[in-house]
Amino acid sequence: MDGRQHRRAGRTVAAVGILLGLGTGAAGCSGSGAAAEDVKGGGDPVTALHRAAGALRDAGSSKASTSMEMATGGTRVTIRGKGVYDYRHRLGRLTVMLPEDPAGTPEHRPITELLAPGALFMKNRGAGVPADKWVRVDTATLSDGNLVTGGATDPYAAAEVLRGTRQAAFVGWTEIAGTPVRHYRGTADLGRAARYASARNKAALAAAAKGFAAARVPFDAYLDDQGRIRKLRQRFSFVNGHEKTSVAVASTLLLYAFGTPVDVRLPAPEDIYAGRIAEDASRDGA
Picture (spheres, rainbow, N blue to C red):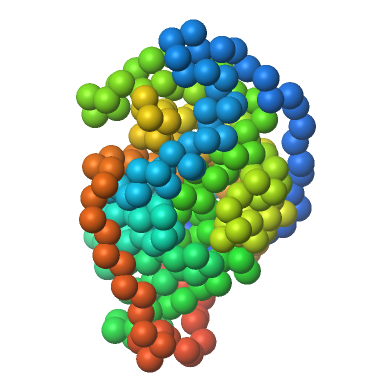
């Protein structure tokens, strides 16, 4: 692949994570929820995973690191983020770094994202948005439920996907940053997750169940002895609405420093951009 193709592919995938329209046509999944017992005290894996979101809420808050890998047309791009999240109020702040171009030059300044119930706010969005303005997106209108749109998965929404776990198995014990964790592997159904999600996430997860190419989400989850997620890797698949190509997305969350103070202030109405948002400028073929 020549440099021009690399630039187009990289920019297209970056656009996928930043408000590119996603395709529809979800397929449901089925299966039993029974799995092996963890004889060392973890209990039934499916039950432990169903409770993981509640354990985060009990923890109150944490720091978060995110990684979103997108593969399309033989090109793989990774978008990384870092920030904090308040699980009780469903408020978070992430700094998201888009990929460099093939020459090693950043294509975009870091994007600041504020996560709130029903909304995603982005600053440094580009595409004609003034630098001092925020873009607000109603997450219930997104066909992926904001699981991939912002280039980072909302940590509490990701945990609530686990409420849709149908099958899971205890893989074994390991460590994450020195903390002993139980490793579980399984699949979740987005439709089921939407039914059992908190009121603030029901609409978004229901949209995701319809918007992805498959409602079945394979995952690897790592829970500490309090049932809190320390690491979660989920794999999504959707159709690029512009190019009708299949895009595979692997989202990884690392959660740590539980109890970290979180102060997220949402933008005032006058700071939100009300104009038309152009499609990503990088789609001009330059």
